[in-house]
Length: 151
Image (spheres, rainbow, N blue to C red):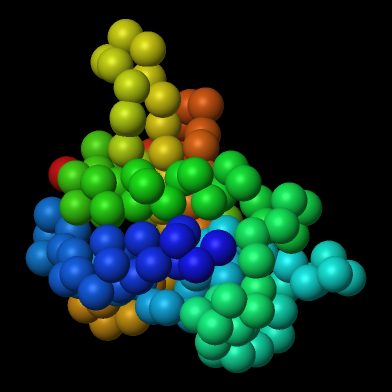
């Protein structure tokens, strides 16, 4: 867990990332808990993310199967390129959650004839964007791409 968190901090938190419109995409240390969908032994996300991060740093929390979402943890490696070099930026189509108002950054990490889409949902905080979740997506309907914000 400490290695994954160290990578996250070094590559996403401690770097200044900007989307193509010049908005800062800001990852916080405490967002790590939600981004990998970490859970406690009761299956709930820890309520105190700051304390959870301190426990990760001290080595008290280990990477245990079933206590985090492996898919979401693997998707973190795409976060920088999705945020800085998206294929499209559209309004967040998910009505509930932490990113309202929000934006969906979409990136094709596959080939044009065989697309593999990844989506980074960010909350809007003035000229800053705060990542909330990242996930794969098969495709998009016209409804999802409506109101395109970029390009």
